[in-house]
Length: 464
Ligand code: FAD
Image 1 (tube, rainbow, N blue to C red):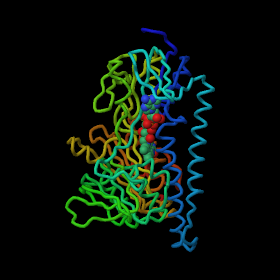
Image 2: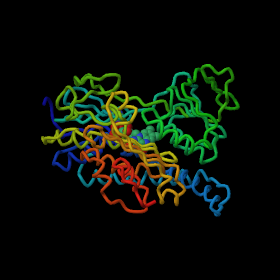
Image 3: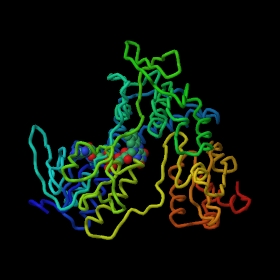
Image 4: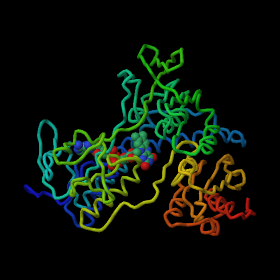
């Protein structure tokens, strides 16, 4: 490489992709420098994504559950919300994890440089460390993990009452009326939080349905269960204009004559990769609409420069970023490695949760691929009934020819925690007998996965 090399591996971005790559590379004996522009490590996920949202969703789920206990004779009264304390709980959760990352970096002797990185050549970056100062760093390999940012909708006014997910997670206040633009995972998670805090919520989704990509039978269960949360879920609907006024943000939808006014508007209409502005072109790296195309070794078209995480493409999920980070670090350290996961799980941590992995029924139909589908409604699960979750559903999808499980989905409490078993079954090439003949603990919600497999085997389960 041209110029002085200050490290073996330069990692740009300290999110799940970047810190995982940096730590793995250091563990493999590489000299690693990690550049992060924000004051803490952890990226979107730990600071303004997965973790703070889950802290608030936990509070939301427990609040709702406590209210439901009134039907069983235990009443707590209406919740009283102390937003400062709630914010402090969320902040402490995040800090504990981001502080832990700092310690892990120190233990591994990963040098963390605070500043904004930009490629100035194929083996050099310049880091803006503040007040105009720049430090140039030479590297043998680079792993770019610069992540993504929320898309800003052009028709929305610049106003503190129009927020993205980061703004919503700050819990500025509890609005009386909240409009969520975008019925994907992030929008519905935030809608869940705010509704538990007392807001009335409308959701607008441009596509024909919310939670695009999830089978409709699961979404129907979810929608029924969430009917109390939403005044309106408008699908195939579009915001065409919005205006800030003294009473709130007045929003006009296409084909709706009467505008409505909201105290808070959350835009969660997608995320855009941070590929522009990194100087990747100076390093000769191809960028396509902000994304950086990579091969199975996570190499860009420039073989010693890797890209991972949200920057490298969908799905934009932390566990995918971590997995890719490990692959890139191993390849950079000279190991034979590649990204060969056959499935990447997805979870909406709403109330109830929806979790899915592998092929969906809709995808199988679109591909004309013959599959057998086994459904286990939780109304036949003793634990689900005892937990007040008899509305849930577990579904397994088998390839008709091989009888191997190729997909699965769960709607109900803790769906995300249970999904790992189905992912493992798919990766291991398991069939219905492998899953159904495995003794699952009774009575658990996870047992419904074994029971769904038994449905497929034609075995009538005796245990409720
Ligand atoms: P990021 O986490 O985006 O990190 C990129 C880092 O690079 C940032 O810290 C950024 O400051 C830094 N950076 C960028 N450019 C530069 C530069 N030029 N110089 C220096 N530093 C730079 N995913 C899940 O799997 N589960 C969830 O429950 C989940 N919940 C979410 C909830 C919300 C509200 C949001 C917004 C996202 C959620 N996600 C979730 C998605 C998840 O956060 C991302 O997929 C994940 O953070 C991607 O990791 P990454 O390493 O690719 O990038």
